[in-house]
Length: 127
Image (cartoon, rainbow, N blue to C red):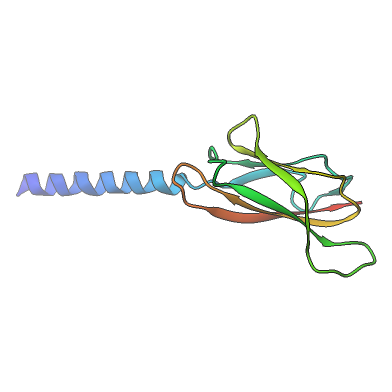
């Protein structure tokens, strides 16, 4: 009976450890350049820094202009190249032409080794 209790405790602890390992494997956005809510000049590139190494073949992003000064319009996709950075935890979005003044949003999808997609967005303004 004592052996069964010891095995049950060992299995419960192993399961808890395994589950906490999986929970930590989801990529979290740690920072971005430009930062969320930033206002400034048009960036030549947008960098998203995550907590986990990304699987670039399953990760990606879309750059959308959400507002132009003095002009109401629906979200307008902007042409951009999305690639991995020199750091495997970084995603780089490079606009194919300079961004005009307006508000922008980067809608991202990040996938790490656990293959569970995490999505989010970052907004900024160009003066």
